[in-house]
Length: 336
Image (cartoon, one colour):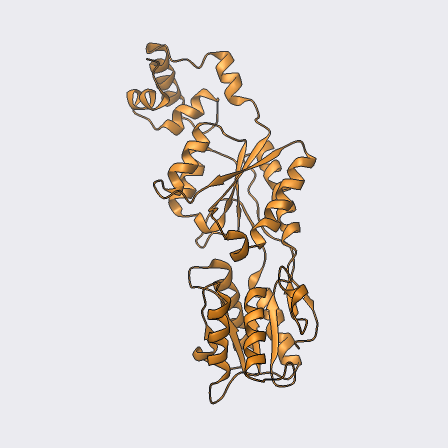
């Protein structure tokens, strides 16, 4: 039976990542370690001859998009697919293909799934949802010296490459607009505490309110699952308080649907008594009446930019990029 790369690594007393670097003539391997690995490979007649090594180094012209994919996801997170479409179109223009890598398998960890894809050279690089990035995942990419790009900045100091949109700036625009409409009692309605984008937008809301010397009432901060009935009920409870808000910021357009429905059921006039502003125009704003004011972010453009940066990193794996893109834009409509 042919010996495996893991057995070579064990015999040489190194990691599989180090063996992979030696096979593919990567940098950052000490010469003594390189010679030890080559000696073990020769001892066991390990297969990667020049033809195999050349094949290993050959470009697959493929990039993986790593995230958790499951039934119903398009309704809970439609913006992911705007990003994916932007990435795919940019890669296709340059002769590359985009494939999906599901990190949501119940019996395997995201780290194991990513490591297998890297070892098998399933693609030339990986674009990864920043939600999954941990110090352990960071060490994995650095250990294999593998081209990657995170969608969303990691929530710790990291030397991985990433691209993101400035959610705090988006919240600041929303607060500023409501203040200009004469609303100071502002509520913020969002998703769950484990939703990174929602929490960043809420943090931006708090900072913007504090800069204006306005009180952030904790009973004006509302968490929801992505269920329209729950959203409507929670907004009705909020609007039934003895001192209800006169302005609401919704962290996505689905929540805006629930907020408008709640106001209608309580007979509250929009925008005379209640102003509503939402993040993201897609997918519900075009069918909602009154037409909602939104802070819109072109996530397709973010994906296109990510695809371009990924190709640059494949060409030059030593390049580090960490940038914000896709600036938010206010679209003023009937709900304010």
